[in-house]
Length: 304
Image 1 (cartoon, rainbow, N blue to C red):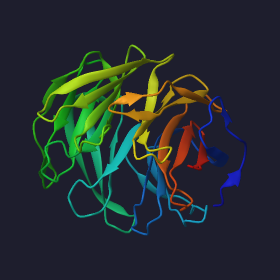
Image 2: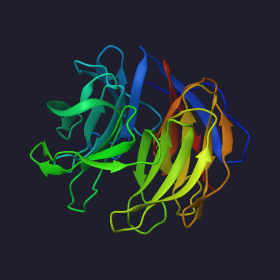
Image 3: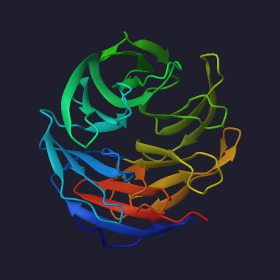
């Protein structure tokens, strides 16, 4: 399936987004993630839809995607991420449904097929989920946010599909979305939290298990997705976020030492879009993939 050029992004700022592409129409797309699932060094596109399906579009690496491989999931996957959950060197898919408690893990056979899956029980429906090695034991742990609760929870990976009881950490406000990344190049994982009060919070990890609130950015709407990538090739992780009901997304450039620029605003054709990232055209530059309900749009990024 060839990706055809459709229309151009309209910037308020001057970040080097080049072309915008529109690929496929589908049933209502609920979630999306970008990852190399079959080990060919090309990043594939995985989507969950309202038909209780996972659709995987494998990437040829030349701006062309295969027709989707479809897996039944029994539930609608409203949010998903990837991570190596069993230390076999293959990226697995971790998915949730925001209306139901529990976590679904789909184990990757290495060739882009998924046969085994497990279900991890939780107490309540989950608003957001991340995976990261939080205790430096070389295993991917699960970090979750419950709906309308003022904390984050960590489930430590005990291997063999087993996870610890939940460890709770209180937050300043009720979080709605979470990103875990090293923001200040100290090799310690920090937090980016979007909260119910329409803020983006930068929270730095001081290395002894304590987190220090660094900065808050007021947003005009509730944030529905966060990317943390080096968008301008200065070896600092920048922050990009989109909203539930507006026609734009914002970029915060990392100045250093946990300080970020004022937001740079970019318009989108549709409202309520969410964001993912990956090198779709294999040019060694990260692209931004915008999911807008029935459409998927790929923004080619040219970093200078």
